[in-house]
Image 1 (cartoon, rainbow, N blue to C red):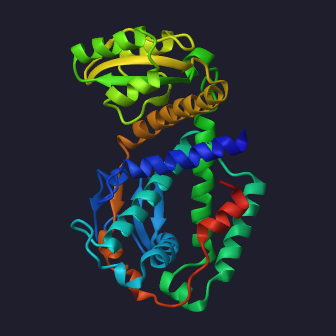
Image 2: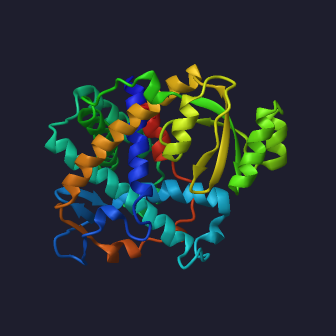
Image 3: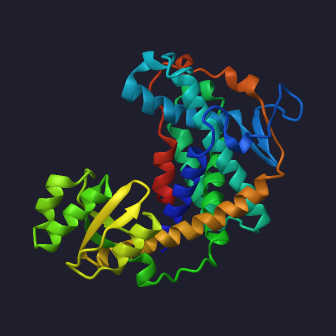
Length: 332
């Protein structure tokens, strides 16, 4: 269960990033872009009292540098992708991810979430493994010290722990009917006249699949379906059918449907859907707490400092991968 919840935390953090603007990061939407005021030394941005340093960001820079250069080559950084270069896109992605993680650590303070001694020891070990694997040239380019690596590891661990804490009381009871997954066949028609013709042929005993092949406007005849995925009339008809039963004509906003039930209760798929619904509840609970906190949390971002970072400025050997080492110690 612990590993499942940790996966949920990681997935949610990714979702927070993806729903933000990759041209600036939604977490920093009320940000003052500054040169020096309010930020000092290597501080890159601040969300409330949570600070991200430039060396921490450079750890992500090295991870992404390796990933993208392996995929596209070193010459692609200045290639235009719809009005922004690949470098600009990746740098915005890095800020979005770091801002999300740093923002979530504020919730840790609000909820009295702290690290235990075992976690602190693993953070130190992970940071030591990463830092000791860096070459002198890499350390110089990144401006990184072991403390910076520990700071980033700590933010990741706290982000996962606070997700567990905030969602611990979420109701995990999901009924079979709420999670029920069914398998049906469908035929969609553009007009009521055609729907009545098809229904008459099915009533005569014609094979559903054969009729569907001749008339269906949908690309898929056989589908699996859970609740909340179709219009109310479609869903009500689909979930009321017994195995091998054929529905009446169903009118929807995109045409007329006739359905046949293949399996009105897929046990394995239903059990898997229960996990999905529980995760959705957890995510909604966490998001509510996150958004409430961020609504009035001030932030600052030293874009001038960030604009000076360029992937092509380092051309040496590949650095160790931070996330690979982090996952080694803390799992997914």
